[in-house]
Image 1 (spheres, rainbow, N blue to C red):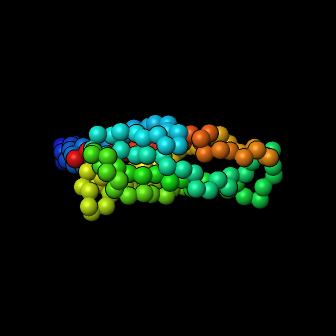
Image 2 (tube, rainbow, N blue to C red):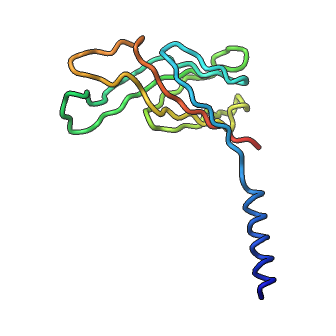
Image 3 (cartoon, rainbow, N blue to C red):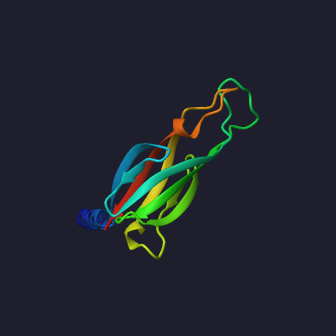
Length: 137
């Protein structure tokens, strides 16, 4: 019985090890207009479309959010598409016309500066923290 149990443990461990996938994670900060070159593709932080985050010195009913616009380019610098994403959201960049993005996810992990009332944040002041995860086969 112990041998059977031991064999089953090895089989289960072997299956779980072979099913593991490797993920390459890249984290970066971009200002509006800056581009992150990732070899097969690049990501451009185009602009902050909406910033409805509750300012520091104000009491709000809800926290709000920010919607950002990114452009995805191929390795030759041609625009492939634009994507809109909210802070803390994660989207897959894949679309049928460009296979290298098949296993790439983009996540916005932060946006600075944080709003303060009554000051307006200019586009040139924004800096976004992004995370790119790519599954390796």
